[in-house]
Length: 497
Ligand SMILES: Cc1cc2nc3c(=O)[nH]c(=O)nc-3n(C[C@H](O)[C@H](O)[C@H](O)COP(=O)(O)OP(=O)(O)OC[C@H]3O[C@@H](n4cnc5c(N)ncnc54)[C@H](O)[C@@H]3O)c2cc1C
Image (cartoon, rainbow, N blue to C red; front, side, top):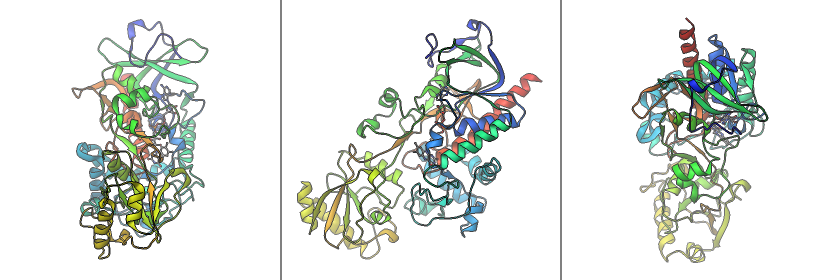
């Protein structure tokens, strides 16, 4: 750890004793966004140095399922091979809904129009894909197949505004390691293009000149003196989010306190990239937004169950993506939640979900009593649900008829999905406000010269937990990582001209 520098305080250019390293583009972090930025910058002819605090590339990206949200333009090769047509406007509308009240229309438009070409780019970098499809609602299937339904496309209200189809694209990988194959391919490509990676080295401060432009950075390698790095085109911050920084979570995203201690994410998601950006005037937005999910499916049959709060009331159409469902859970008052199932749909929940059986009974009244809920609360909810489900309707929450079934086959069970007990993995969506070009913006909306950010260090496409669909983070990391790398290399080219 550096003694003298701080991610929240920049180093003045006049205090730099001399440059130890000089490059066109300096990238901080070698996950999917950093690798994508490095590839594009190097491909444009820039000299690129990547600084990575870990001993190898990967970051959280390498732990991920590797799902990338893609579509539009009539469909990707995997969509078309499996009979799905995906118009750009449907893709755009879904992404706009997924982005929530502050969806970034310009960014969504660029992504919707460029996603197909981006998929081809990923293939060209060596990311392996089969054009196969797994029907249903799989989550990180690990079969090596590609196309999955990874969001709320077929669920209300999304299905009413955008023609649905599956858009999650997984690399060919057996096990849950698609992200590993993704970053492996990108890192290999970066190396082939001459990108130099400096491992075990942490970016500890940005260097700014008197006009506030970023001229480089200070890096720290254990056991060595701090080094000063000049970056002619700029610094690209790709250091991930802040899912492992409890102090930042407490400050910005207190919903985290309602969850059990084990979160998600790995790597070094300590928020240092965001703090580096803020140290030179960058503003961070949507810092309270997390991706949170509840793995109550698979088993898929449990989507036919109903979720209730501790008042015995429903609050969401249970066929929405698990991430959306989890957000409606955390929007409720109280910490106790139950998934109600009957004998026809019950299967043992996955071990990792930590969803346990809370009560079993021959009648719904027995279950209600065992849970200690207000008499009549749960039973009324089930009676109303069953009355409409029998007709294939859900007038209260609009669950699709495909998932509707009267819960009328005893014995009945309530499965505990309590916030502090079940597994609610999360990662952060808030980060530096950036243009689609990757330029980091101040609160006034001015670009900070020489500073770019991508991936979860930035607030990109995914910015609303209730709309997040699997694949949106890595899609954003790789797509806009490329753009940030290109911007920094272009600035280096202009500086050199
Ligand atoms: C289990 C799991 C499954 C997931 N599955 C998916 C999925 O299928 N699809 C999807 O879209 N998203 C998924 N996500 C989310 C997604 O993986 C992340 O949001 C994404 O990988 C972030 O990429 P990144 O490039 O921003 O950060 P990272 O991949 O974490 O890369 C950041 C790098 O920066 C380094 N670093 C940090 N600070 C510094 C510093 N100061 N100096 C130098 N280096 C630094 C880190 O060590 C790291 O290597 C998943 C997440 C998890 C945990």
